[in-house]
Image 1 (tube, rainbow, N blue to C red):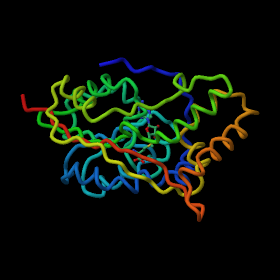
Image 2: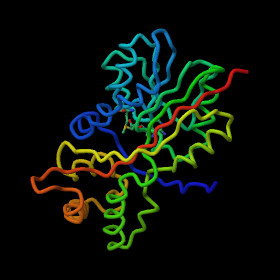
Image 3: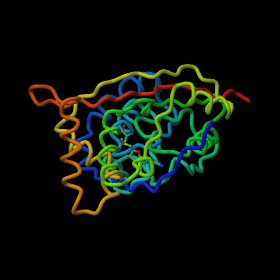
Length: 258
Ligand SMILES: C[S@@+](CC[C@H](N)C(=O)[O-])C[C@H]1O[C@@H](n2cnc3c(N)ncnc32)[C@H](O)[C@@H]1O
């Protein structure tokens, strides 16, 4: 498997902006929660828990949930919900044999060291535990990435150096899981065109910061406006509603009993 280009991505998470532009992320998490099939009393790690909207749902189902997220601001928002949440990177998990399940929604594609994540998840799980997740998959927001890349190229920048996302195929992620010893029970790429709360600039400001911060601050508004206009004919309908070309990779894998 090829090594992923690591980038010095600049991405900040502002819980207020996240709630305004990205509430759909957790709102659309029901199918992966269903795939997790949580049972009351289970110990669950929510990896990349964000502001804890789904973590809170799992707690409401009677699970004992720990949230981990790399963003201190998101963890503060999760704690404000009364959740057991901690700042930490999914690429450096330190749990050992502690969970019945590791759950992750919309976070794994931000973690480019995928094998380190999978190794940490494996260690965190008790034998017989499961890893259930949904992440961006191959082709996710490809139209948006193309427009960002073209606008950066016009300014002399190579977007590959700042692209923060890892969108694997189902086959590739399955191979990584199996290489660690997981038994993959299901894995599928799911095209999911997603209606945005506002215009695409709100989405770009929330999720694609590392592309615009490649430019001096004074150039960013014009850059974002140019990307929005390039995307308008492809992602905006006649009544002004924007839809992003999301593709999800949803999987369930088991750590066998010893
Ligand atoms: C789109 S949000 C999803 C949050 C939440 N799971 C949800 O469904 O609303 C992605 C989250 O991944 C987190 N994240 C990004 N890289 C991470 C890493 N290396 N380790 C842990 N969390 C990370 C971000 O801080 C952010 O809160």
